[in-house]
Image 1: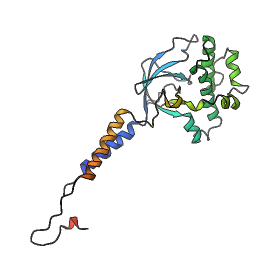
Image 2 (image 1 turned 120 degrees about the vertical axis):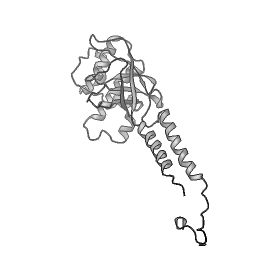
Image 3 (image 1 turned 180 degrees about the vertical axis):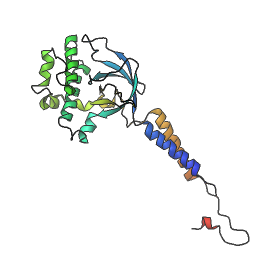
Image 4 (image 1 turned 135 degrees about the vertical axis):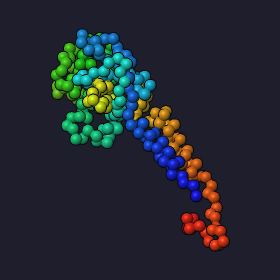
Length: 239
């Protein structure tokens, strides 16, 4: 009887590689808006996520990335995270992410066209996770936040679009470096990618693994041989 262990091992390796390769996304900074507040570029930023171009807004002012830099990241769907209670152990975390999405929606949907308001909007977004770091100079943007600095639930409920947002969370490098984080607008699944959607190379690996397993299942077995002169079946094939 032939040993199929090497084939099974290869199949398992391909399946494992396919699943592992979909764990994180490859992000690259490819462009900036050209507008800045005198020190930092402000929204939007142009990224590619596994080669797919997207516009994004940075909501992390504490870290930094440079042009053409590539880094690994996970994409967190706000709708999924909220439904699964992923923020339940961190006070106000969900409200903070909702506020970033709520503020970002004003740019993504084209409602803020004046540069001064755009700069103020970017500052307000940066302030959500780093309170007081930037001055918000637009009374219009300030009016979006409410007295506590987080967008009021009534406004979120009225706008009702934060479920179309996901957050690109950078994965720390081996040396401890952490790239900036970005918010994406992906209505009805368009624009961005989710880590649950395999990359093309992952799909190929997964297909090869399943193909090999299928070949093993449909491959006909040889009939058992009787031992010469004994009239008994080989005990290796005994039922």
